[in-house]
Amino acid sequence: MENSVCPDYSVSSSKHSTRPALARLYAVAGRSICVECAAEESARIFRRYFAGWHVSPLEDACGASPDATIKVRDGEKSPHAPAGFESFEVAEGGVCRTDGRTYFFESEGSAVVVRGETPTRVEVWFGDTPRARENAARARVIFNASMTAMRRCGLFELHAAGVVSSAGAGALFVGPSGSGKSTLTTQLAAAGWRYLSDDTLLIFDGGGSVEARALRRVFAVTEPTVASGILGGYESLLADPVPFDVRKLRFEPQSVFPGGFVEACAPRVLFFTAVTNERESRTRKLSQAETMRRLIRMCPWACYDKPPANRHLGLLAQLSRQAAGFELLAGLDLFGDAARASRYVEKLLEGA
Image 1 (cartoon, rainbow, N blue to C red):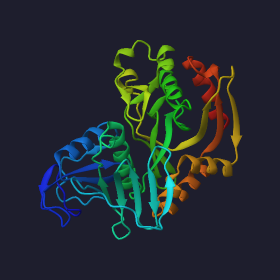
Image 2 (cartoon, one colour):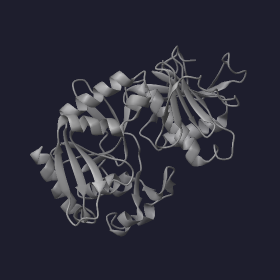
Image 3 (cartoon, rainbow, N blue to C red):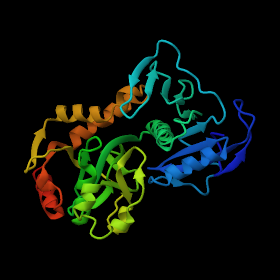
Image 4 (cartoon, rainbow, N blue to C red):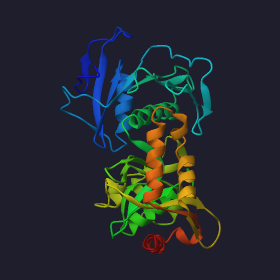
């Protein structure tokens, strides 16, 4: 199956299952990932989830060889990590266990596993408890499995927003939920900046430089951001909350800022953001070492997921050399005024 796939094609069973599988190949950043399911429900969940990302189904995939495979073990009991594995609590929920070769992620009875002998094959078990079947719980498992597969293709997730100035300089806002990434990105897009994503990016070796690529299609904003008037009459386009953060509502940025999307950029500046209640914003230039430390804190999988860790850490080190790092303590002056936010960030970019 891993050597020849066709989209949504019934293939012969593997030794682990007597039922036929549904396979579909997806392309992202020049790589391909096959999602193989035994049940149509699981295949449909992956399709729906991937529709919210800049991940494209390959319609003519017969004979293609994927860079990684996600195999959903529908109807099978999930395994447990062997005793003695190193354990890490994951901030978004769940536990990661590893011996340096094999990777286990467990959450609410669901599991994601990569075995040392098959490093590009990601196996997934969905839990069957009511809590495990909740949308947020399943979304967390799908996200973990997908990012695990992408890391094995040299694509590494970064909790950051990305924008590009009129001069073509790429800037990333790096930080956890609530650090102002979505609001700043929305304001800059309203001021004419081009945008990649407001929340999740993939970074990879673009051949001599680190490139950041958009992953999530939608933007997600809080009620105060909507109330500030930044969306300029497009409030009707707001949709349901995002699975991981019910405080935020989604909207399609290309409907609000047509022609503003750019797929990738080579970051020139990294802003590590935090929202304050102060009247004025403050910035502080970071050393390369401090920039690297902050990147590692925002990329815990560079430590949790051991097999691709050296490659992951090497890419973060390259990014810390390539882009200037700043601590950005965003005050009240940066919110609600798109033009002011644009001038503020543009000035920092010019100084970098």
